[in-house]
Image 1 (tube, rainbow, N blue to C red):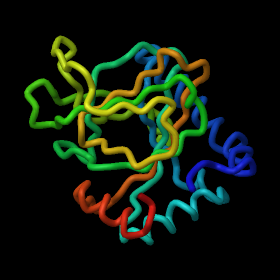
Image 2: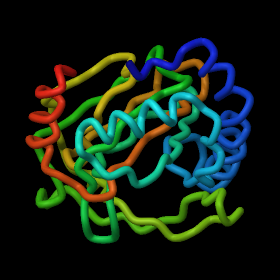
Image 3: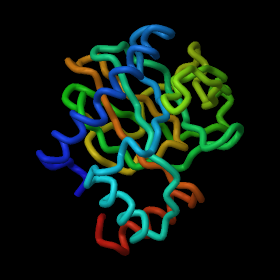
Length: 208
């Protein structure tokens, strides 16, 4: 249900993609071609019919909606190491709802059965582009030791489309074979619940 319709894609191209382009330029200028997150003013999503769909979905699942965020990634960006998303400083995020707009074909998303308690996973203190303030700001997440061996992933999805992403697990998005900038809208949960509880609610609502 979260594949954007043609009308929703056109709206996003006109109203969201320009913000994504600015964020990509800022991030790539600082870090080079890679994949990272930026915060947008939530008013950017006003008037997009997908906004109501997402918030209704959250209500149906009994989830509190936190915000939309935007991830951008350079086409062909070389593989990064696994990471874990953060909900706040010092606390991992359990899950986020992904709605990619571009850069799906050729992407690969992998997960490992490991999280922040794994000694190979380190704290990451960095800066990310904050469009709400028009400047870089301090940010936090978890990033794997670049010298650690992670072996084969536990689960892999090629050409990942809309999905609930289990981001408290070590995971990695590979864009090596993409040919356009990946632009991914994500919806975050304010009051987190366990992944197992989220799966139960999705199952009870016949999503899986």
